Length: 225
Image (cartoon, rainbow, N blue to C red; front, side):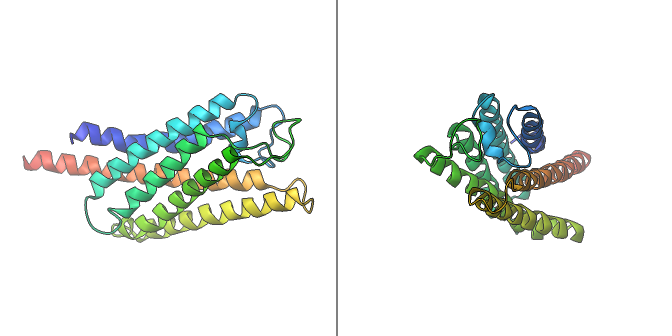
């Protein structure tokens, strides 16, 4: 693989890490009837402007898959070199499926539609699980490898992995409490958005780190040559 192609793959992760959460927050903040506090990120794949988030998820997933390939080439062998990229690819697959298969109406969104449970919604739930588990698992798996150059990287990666999964579970609990009428409106949406923001923020940071390593290695190889 050429140096330019590898740089493009690594850059794909940075683009995905910025694109997905920015479009989610921007669309959520301006979508009529949608609440960033109340409604899950997946709800933006339904109702008005649903096409925007479908494109966001699919494109973001493809970019993340490209980043997983680039990370595999940079890491090559050693700790996390195999399972780190595999878990990134798992998250990418979940994001693509989430874009192609919309979730069910929930918590009053889209407006005027009651909560329903369909096969499409269940497939979307599985895709969401793959996304969050993949992001969290990749952060934990790569923590040791990244920590070889700096202990701060190990701490940051483990913290990111923990926050992604804890916030995602908390969002699920808040959603359940809301549907039972115990806490309304519960911050299910905010918790899920924060989980995604944490995961993709970590992707951006790792992408920049690996890009710098690639540039440094390329420069060193050029001087040697």
